[in-house]
Amino acid sequence: MSLNKDGSYTGFIKVQLKLARPVSVPSSKKPPSLQDARRGPARGTAVKRHTSFYLPKDAVKHLHVLSHTRAREVIEALLRKFLVVDDPRKFALFERAERHGQVYFRKLADDEQPLQLRLLAGPNEKDLSFILKENDSGEVNWDAFSMPELHNFLRILQREEEEHLRRILQKYSRCRQKIQEALHACPVG
Image (cartoon, rainbow, N blue to C red; front, top):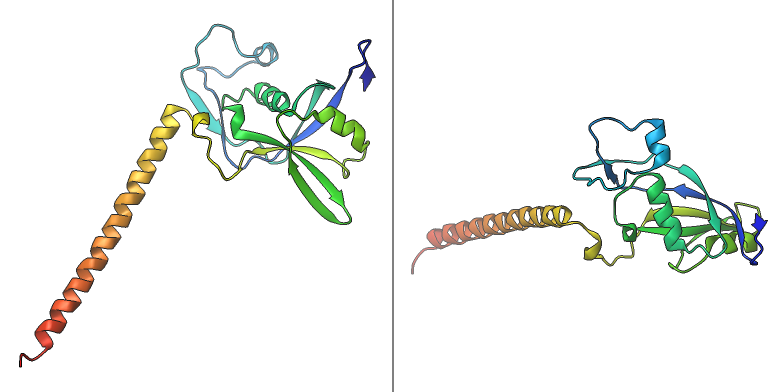
């Protein structure tokens, strides 16, 4: 880490990527060259199509950050580095700590400052490390999804509803048939 004249400091944090779902990146007609990747995404060009793929499990990225860089900004920087076009709100930064043989995870708030946490924890990665994961709070943030993704959810729900309705109608039909058989087998008396 290095101290700046204004009292802030800069340093590196190491973030491990543990993503279970695929991410979306812009698709292009030709693969980007090394120079294209260094320059970053082209300015003024509209990306119309995306390709989804899984990032390698346990990939690690080192980021050069400032002491006042927030967790939300770290997530956005990581997504930019990998050219991921998914909404940053779909992801969360977690701290991982090992104490007494137990592993603890804690989701960082958007305004927490990872470099300060790293400095306070010391150099041992068992005391503190950072992990980028999907933001699975249990509550769905529908605003974070694109319209095609939302339409796809609706199609899936429609199919599930149709299948559930089909099973209910089959069950009703079987019950009705058994009742009619029982009625015909009873002597009228």
